[in-house]
Length: 342
Image 1 (cartoon, helix red, strand yellow):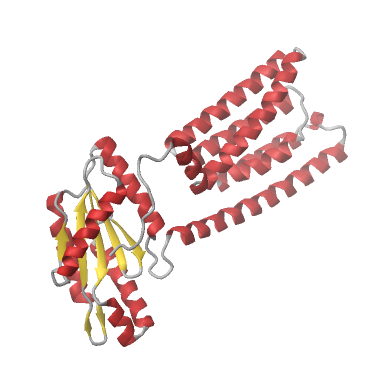
Image 2: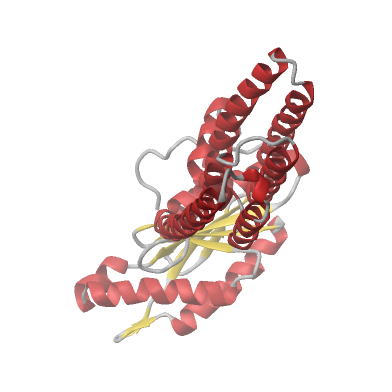
């Protein structure tokens, strides 16, 4: 059963902290936000300078680019689709750069920094396509360069920048995925850890508050697990934990999610489950555990405490009610399911 003080989480978190948490948890959104802020500052400054000099067409174009980038950034924050917003911004900037260089006759030096940004903002396929487009189109126009040497230099440097940007973005993305798995998965069982559980519970309580969506939660604790470790060793205990996770994943619905809360405690979150649907689902799970979860000298059982999510209920209270039901199951003799009153 749950021990110690649990972290605060719920809908009462200040908006500023929620924004910071989103930036910490979504690397691509953070990168997109920083890039748009810097790009808008740089392009906006040039736009003001050109406006002062009377270059109204260029100033208007740069103002439209800034507005489009800010609009895409707002879309990313509202919908969470930062990858799509990054692809749109990268495409917009590539088209804008071609227009500025080929039509308005501005310097092609912006292409190098733009290619680095493209590989960080857009998908790999789009990044390669846009980079090839920039290099091929600009490199094919002799009027952009002073002579053939400058043109050859541009092509050589542009290809190098594209290759290095691709390798850096690919390695960064791969390492980020690995860090994400490490931060959100239990290393022994491969299921979600406490951090990902709290995030899922926060989503369910928010959905219940806004849309009235139903959900249920079950806190599962292995009976006499310490004796398993004492009799058979910690390797056998680890094998029991892994087997329990496998049994649960093979029994639960596709929409359910299973987490290791700590030690021998697990949590099953069941979206869309009404109070009447809790008992049949958990009876099925417990029966599968009775049949399949074993150590050399016999079966291993579990006690389960469950609670249906109430409207306007905080995540911590939801989990506490399931914990009290688990305590009741333990007190009643273990190897049973107890459901908190709705």
